[in-house]
Length: 240
Image 1 (spheres, one colour):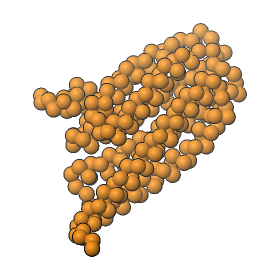
Image 2 (cartoon, helix red, strand yellow; image 1 turned 60 degrees about the vertical axis):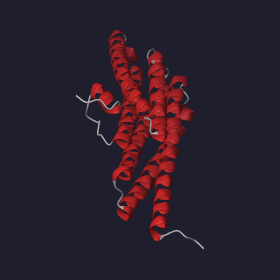
Image 3 (cartoon, rainbow, N blue to C red; image 1 turned 180 degrees about the horizontal axis):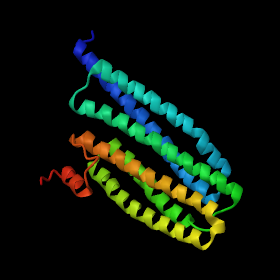
């Protein structure tokens, strides 16, 4: 005889629904991670075939965002979750949005790679693409890992690294502008590098957003519009 009460059955079903949307989110995260690394590789190696594949895969990411959003909406409507369960559903919705936008940025990079394959490699910028690309790919992986493990220390590390990426991005852009002024013939190709650097910087921003969602999930504090010092205080339970 099954001794489960109706409330126990409902609770078990709710846990299964939460686990399912988390699984969908992490599957989407894995696909988006590959999109980013493939886009960077396609740009560095001027691999137009790989770049075309990145562009084609963007539709799958869009479809996954819609599916996760719909499933989360059903959970909100049917279960009316509270406290940590509500924060989990909201964090999944927000993270899914950031992942979709990261996929868009990867697609933009891939389109620049296709353009450079047609026009010829840019004379400058690949060192910057490689270095910033490695940084933001690592940030994305760590942000997703922090969500899986609900590790707010790792989430804080991602947010801190975003600041360094922003500084490096600014330096790289200034170097690219100087080079175009010295060699106007290179403007079109160098602009492709600059747009790609911008896409990478935006991917870093979205990785930071995901990290902020993790802190909200675990701590219940919204840290989206606070500085790194205040974010660290929140993570470490420090008061002003």
